[in-house]
Length: 213
Image (cartoon, rainbow, N blue to C red; front, side):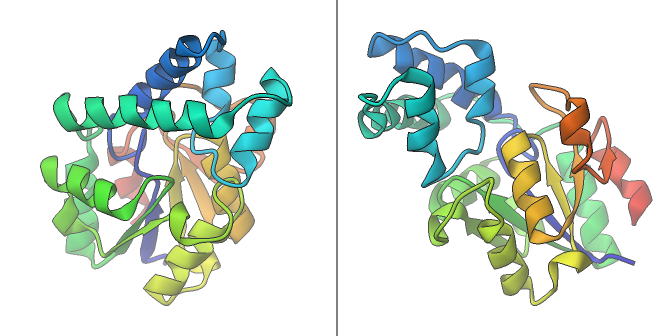
């Protein structure tokens, strides 16, 4: 039986993905770009070095990713610091259950470790987790497998011995490429037929994962 779970953070354990979605669109509009909902969905959990090229494909070779991304981060940091932050429904119940069962847990996030730790403490989830790793600690962010491979190394397990829990296509591809069995708990979007090929199971809530342990 698998005894290790690696979670994405934003949109999976924390109800924060909606802020990144909104602030990307706001930042793009600030610099004169129209970002569609579909385009905003496509950049969820998209890490370096892939993000700049992705934006240039969408908005042209002269797109200044660093400038827009810096402004978007400022907007997002403000809402994360000042706005209400909530855990996703069932997050605490699931993490308590996994801790009781002796299941080891980690976070594999695109965000920084310090910020992620702070948010987890605010919603009361931090003490249920064994490790927090960030895509900023590895060479390639999601959808590359690096952050999941690094999380597995910190937990001293092989990827095949881990479940991953994700909400976005980039995160799912990252975990799958690492060799993890991937659960999807949809947040802003549902998976299409192509994405479902990479998903071990789709569940509609975090508490539904309890039956697998």
